[in-house]
Length: 159
Image (cartoon, rainbow, N blue to C red):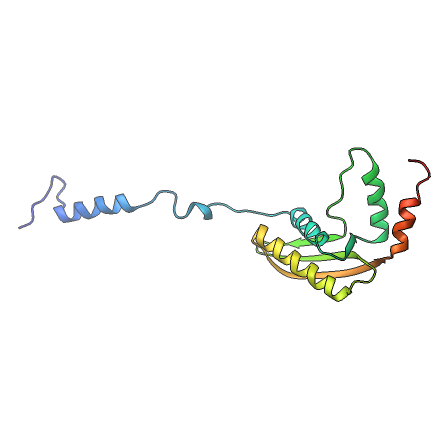
């Protein structure tokens, strides 16, 4: 015969209720899934810009005009180097797409440099952000010739 407690419930039902209350978690689920993380386009652009510059054969990022303005900005005291120059990102909730504009050194195989840039950018962005990189479009806007570097070094009259 089952004994009843004061409220009329059987002992087994009371034990089940206590057990259920002990195993119920407050807050509902894994703490890592509570809330939302958003990553700004500029963050992905910085990561991609740094990753592209690491590749051997990439001389600079951006078009000629952007590099000219960037060089002026770099010489101004307190002016920060434009890491995102030549990089445009579109970032969604789980994916990112990138457009890069690069200048390569003379003599390198452009297709090999582009492949290496693409691989390094995809690996860096995916590792650091967790976003899937769906495409990396690369436009080679110029080739840096060896004699152009000599002109730049001797181009200033005052030091």
